[in-house]
Length: 127
Image (cartoon, rainbow, N blue to C red; front, side):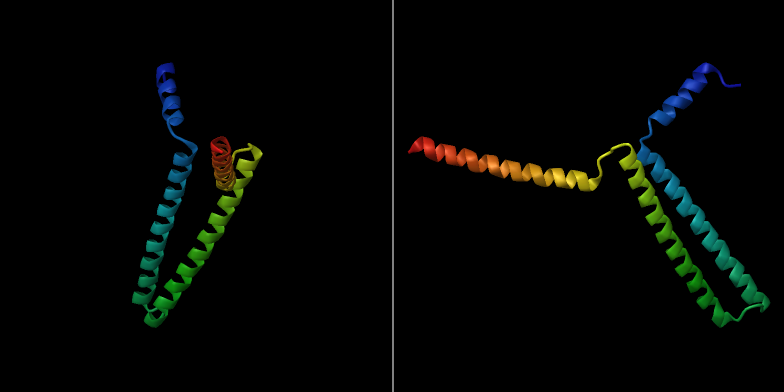
């Protein structure tokens, strides 16, 4: 039975993780599961070859087909994940990398303008 102190410790533990860290761990777990599945598929195909159910020459073709499908699936999943994350950012009005890049460009332009005005003022004051 969990005591209130134990429950509080569990909450603090999750609060110590940022959203990025949690999302990263989830993605790494998914990648690990995919890698294990791929290894098991190769072993299964090897057993089929040993039993003579498929030709040895077809083994590589089949494995390559599986790799290509996995690549496409991962790309589709990554695109879906990015799309969903952008929707979350928009929903909560969180700035994106593009927003920061645009702000950085504006700040640089303003700094340049300030420097130009400062130089013009110094020249005007020296005349």
